[in-house]
Length: 338
Image 1: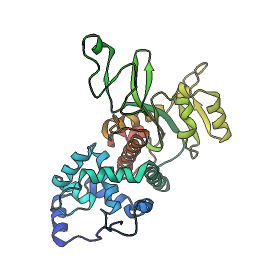
Image 2: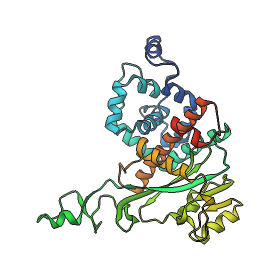
Image 3: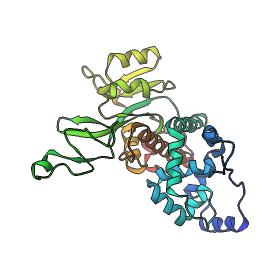
Image 4: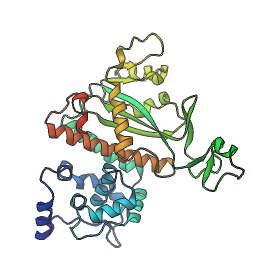
């Protein structure tokens, strides 16, 4: 049964938080930024109407988002909820509460699933749009590869070792028996191959806010995913040469979106304006928001990870923009605030 969050803590808890957490602290501004109860309403169908009350879903939602804001594992998150007073406040715990068990966090993610997290992601993007933070003047589309949560026993290692492939490892040239069957071999160049996935995003160039997010196996060509990651609200779209396919030009023409895809032949580089923004945002998601490497096995779980990582990156951007009171300004003037 869905638990209910206490609307008001005791006087001592408020006094402790007021004395230890500055009023302009990141977690105070973030907690006030969104209507968490409204976001949690997307999860109502995950709960029954009888049984023991669960941890309130809005609290659990703040837990999994905070995980990616601080790039923490489930066990690290449990520890930080016990030790970190700012996280206790953000999540809604009393100062003397222990952290929510790591197994509860894992079960919550699995119960909710990626589709519901995507609906929450879209609600946050819509709020940013309604506040004028997302201009939709120009969107940039690109992908970022990341490795699967699988250990690779490379050919070089086998050539210098008489033993068979160690338990828990996957041969470099054969993924048979891999613990993550959804991961696939992809190539960034002739000399660089990876076993993993690709995270495709569409980013509003003026704000740096991600508006669409899709995860595919690592062998998926960037260009064929454009229809999935394209945001219809964009008035113009820029993308690199991998997206220079007839189907994509036709798609943009049908949707009356200005086409700035860089051509493989005959392009003088004028369409390249703004594309660096999506590369910068991809780096932020991977380095600072828990999207650097797959933490789980399977496309569903990995997609959930990247949806939450994209949500965390967007919340950081929204707070940065609103703190500077310059909505819709160019990313180049604001990226240092991320």
